[in-house]
Length: 88
Image (cartoon, rainbow, N blue to C red; front, side, top):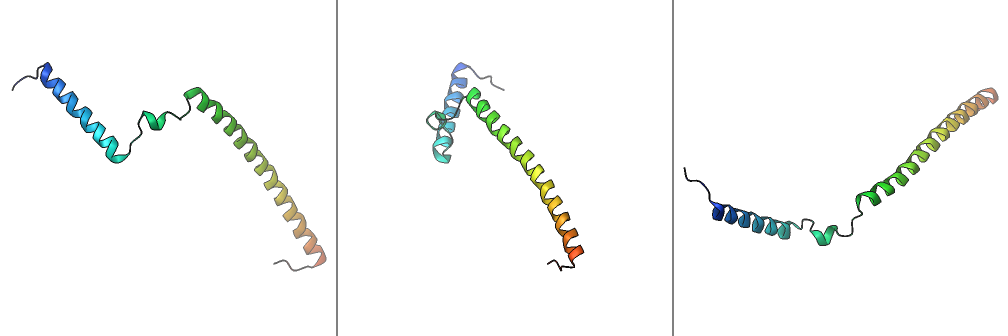
């Protein structure tokens, strides 16, 4: 079995590079031009901290409102029962 020399390895590298470039062009994969507008890691995590804080507040609010709705439903049921009102 023959060993590859540096020229063979360079030829393989060039072939892979051309193949990857063709795949990027054909499939529309992201290039530096496409990803240039993406935020860096610090910007991303800063934004995610804000979003997660808002999400936490919304979940807490939903929990509180859920309990209030349940309390109101129970109260309405007791009122309808005592006044003999048919509920739908």
